[in-house]
Amino acid sequence: EHQKWYNRGRCDGGKLSEPQRYLRRAYASLLRLAACSEAINKGGFYDLQYINRHHQSEGFDERYHYAFIRHSQKEKLVVVVNFNRSEKYRIHLRIPPDALKHSGIPSSRKLKVSELLTGSLETEIYPADLFREGDRFSGLVLDVPPKQAYILRFD
Image 1 (cartoon, rainbow, N blue to C red):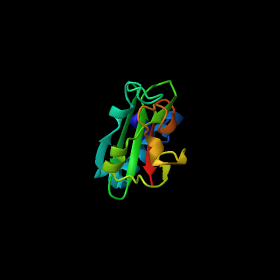
Image 2: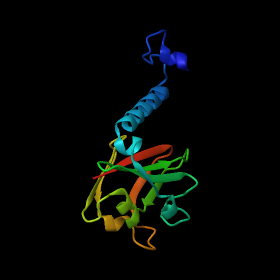
Image 3: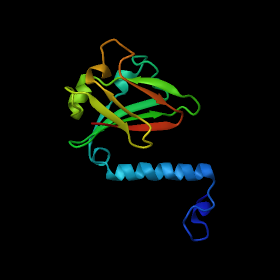
Image 4: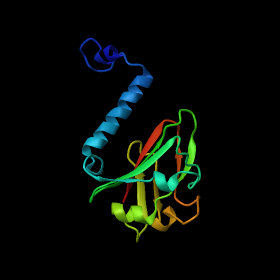
């Protein structure tokens, strides 16, 4: 498979199949983002599994989903991954007030949310809607395709 990318010394991927080209573009995009993101390469971490597992959040299945916050002073990112190979999920991702405080995500104004890998999501949400005690339908609603990850910037 490496030889398909190498393509007789051209190193242009000329012999890659379309799925292989897609995968290469996806990895290149992810690596560029990781290299340029202060939150990812130097920032803090806040796990969101504990508040979303065991049917605490509608649609969230800890067997297939993983969610966390990476944060720096300048950048606040939420990463959500669906490891299921065939199922799309509508997830209500709950983010509690202590996560907002720990990560430096403002809790006093409406937040802009944008997806960085594909640009497929732009929305706004009030911090109070990210978590309501005992309400599994609170949170940021995401439709996450199979084998897909979202990296969401909170501004």
